[in-house]
Image 1 (spheres, rainbow, N blue to C red):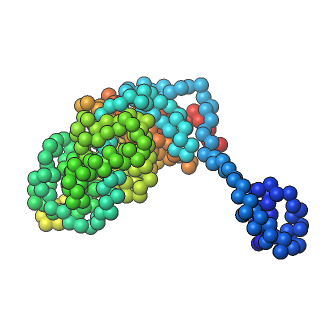
Image 2 (image 1 turned 30 degrees about the vertical axis):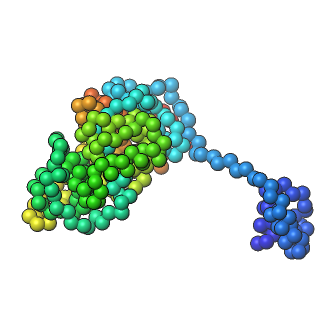
Length: 312
């Protein structure tokens, strides 16, 4: 064992000594170890990232028109951008916000089995998608988490934040601190649900947030549930939360994670990561013209990418 170690060190530091001498003489080997350590020569190592896939087609985009104002397709392993359209244009992101909310929530170390009582504060400013529960109704924190990510329920998201015990303003500060940690210059959060048009980013930056979020097993689990069912603790009212990702049932797509969003100022937004034969592809679309379009365009981009690139 010592022989192999010293031989490796000799070759690493470019010492010119016959290896058989090291093998025969342990004293010499120990002396060489001391000399190598005392020599303090610096060694530089080059880190290689995975090779990007190779383009095998002259087509620069799918035949289907992409109505999204901005979008990006990224090979996750290499980080290579495979397709883009206005990727640095900043716009409202709508409920894609909930991915960052989930990230910060999970960092508080929550107890998913803890009971939470819905309050009037959980309904402040809430419109559109919401969980049909009443003030004073009791449910578990995990029910809020899955209702937020599976069904994009805005009051469940607000209640989820309140369940941490943090003031909403402090929670939002943590969201923006996370943005700073990611080194994102054009992403900003003003609220936790995505109802605020001031929540903004671009597809290039949000792909990094989505990539980080989909590495979390809890977020992945929620993103891949076709529906989530639970009963409130006190009233025993059954709730069935349908996933807003219509592509989840598509047999041609194998999702790692996904999140939808809609706001008049944002249009239809979609962030997803799908896998095929071990190749993970991230797609982010902002400002598609309709609910149907964002899903059709995401699938077209995924199919086009697999047809247009070869992975080594």
